[in-house]
Image (cartoon, rainbow, N blue to C red):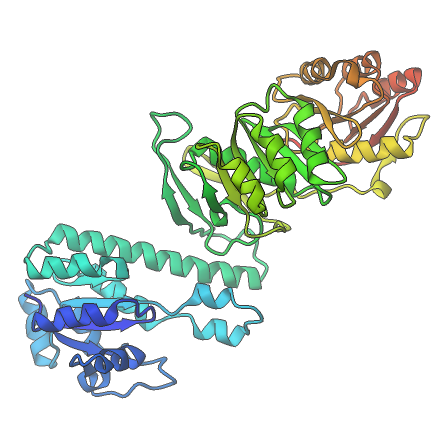
Length: 510
């Protein structure tokens, strides 16, 4: 049975109950600062750390546990005669249990108007040192960093079942915890010193849920979140109704949010397999969703819809007429909830932020490594467009071109989007050649292609896409430009009176 425990916690959840359980097992408790006060206030006997070390807490508590009588008691191997002899020679008693959690660095960073001084003072030094010492010596020391483990540890002590394997499991949690903590600190300092891609790129994520399976039923999966992420995020959304999200649900829903962040007016986005099947912008949300639905009423079936305005009863009725996996919105009226929850399995997600982050890093794993890049936050304004043809786009065409350009960046390459009146009317995605994507989009649009605009995520290597657009009645095109054969496409546009503008920016999405 352990004889001594050291307790020093920032998160004091259930600590009195745990300390009481240890005391009832005749475990001597050593403690520090506020933890000591809380334990004593609960009527539980405890010894101050400075009575053990013979050295006072100094420098506003910065130095209190960094002492040989603490770390010697944690690191001394009980099976090593030399270690035990040195402990006895130096008056060091073993510490058998360590219960520590760390200064609230993350919570401090999240405070409004927090000063750098406060942030720095919430970098824990003694806590991680004790945790690492105890975890390194897990064969002799039980180390607890998570209040959720208190009950199991007490039971193990009472039943003498806290074996080496369980202590190793507790140690593993400690090293994950300190790695997470250090990663947040490293990322804070890297941001402060503007080291965007440092020599070591340290990331940390916190588990949201274990998923039923991954992309396919034979693949295991889990969902993690960036602990300091801001902006629109599924990880911080509230699920108001429906069954648990799946791996593919999360992928598609995130794609919908990425697209939605492009538009500020009342907007609705419908997504299937991470590609938009319909985007609509309107005077109000009902109008916007109507446009998104009419973009492709076949593909939207079983899809995901995200909107950027509160869902009210009329829009809810329209949504409820079709089978949808997920509906995402900043809020729902009571009437809308009553209508939508009539469907048992539809997932309703409420966003906790209406604004998206300006930029973040995207990570893609490859065998043996990872690729890191900025997200594609590139935007083009009207003033930055370069007219390449004899005819300039008119005011309506220009608005449709900018609408379609925002959409095409979120479509898998090769990508073609047709747009008209703030609505996608044809989407061609992921083909091995550009004309293939164009033909799909034009076929989907049908007669609506007449008078529409076309957006291409990359330049035209040959004029066949422009020729197909002309035959379909498309009147304006937006594309990056930059092909050696740009003039061939310009000539076809001029021949058919099509206005074409260059953005100077491509939007490959692999």
